[in-house]
Length: 420
Image (cartoon, rainbow, N blue to C red; front, side, top):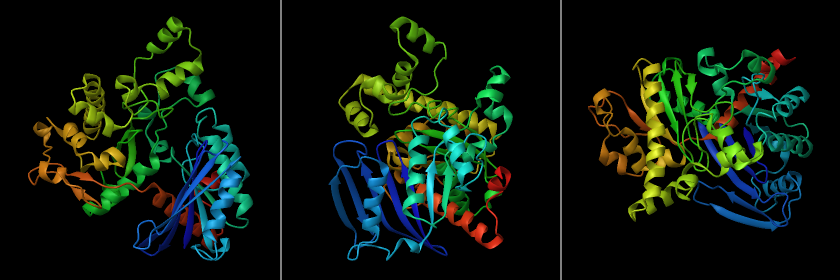
């Protein structure tokens, strides 16, 4: 079964065409369309990106909208010489990343008018992501008639948290009227990592207790109990929680009106400060952890402060989740760009936790290896793992599950039944 996975952003569109055959997974092609809506666009298309015959094709032309970009993707997919499918009819499904589904979307779901309306209605909760996500869905409906579209929501994994985890101690009417609650993000990644960790450890997912650290330019931590999300660091938006590349993470809420009053900032300007001008960038002017490390080695004190702020926020959250699980932790798992590749960050996070049973194997941690691996010492009470995330594969598998259920049983997902 071939599934096209689409992640449409405000000025970009990432995609992969994945073939699933039993336990076999192959990425037939992958690509990125950039600068959509600007004068000059660029599409980078990779054929067999993980294989021995990898080939890169680059096309530059204006993409006024997502439609023109995805039309070029279709032409490359079906190109007589370089294409990886003969026609669009070979697609089993199209899986879309959708960032915010509120409480209405608790599972991957076949796209229909009601689902599109929910995505649109959730725009105030996901103003940067939901509009382009919806645009990508609509374009694919036009360009791939008859092929089912499935929306997989970033908030899905967190919507099953208990009330004490997701509610804020604000007037209850804000939850009832505006949907103000903790939703959590990076859910597709955390869900994938929970499944992969359970498989790696040889445990049923329903028995897994784990803490998953998705560390990248955007970072979050999820607390997993019995295979489900018990708590998570991100909140109503991806701003809450850890220090990130350009996001401040959790701060005293009183800081917001104070700065706005002092500097005469509008809500939009204050939002830009917290989301785009803070984090590593705000502390030291560098937003990439690799650059932060390089500056630290040269004695840059602000870069060192940015790194220490990052580690401090991770440890605070990791510790709280450890105690939420009562110390019954099957694994702590690192993933995403920093989590998978940055041994310095992993060592700093685990440093000083020996007293509660965590022992890092420094030699194993320093190595760069492919695939899931253990980086804890043999005498560690708790496994410390590194597992590469694969959100695209999770979306593809979810799309197959939803479409297969619909075709086999003549119904959609449980969520679609609820909506109908």
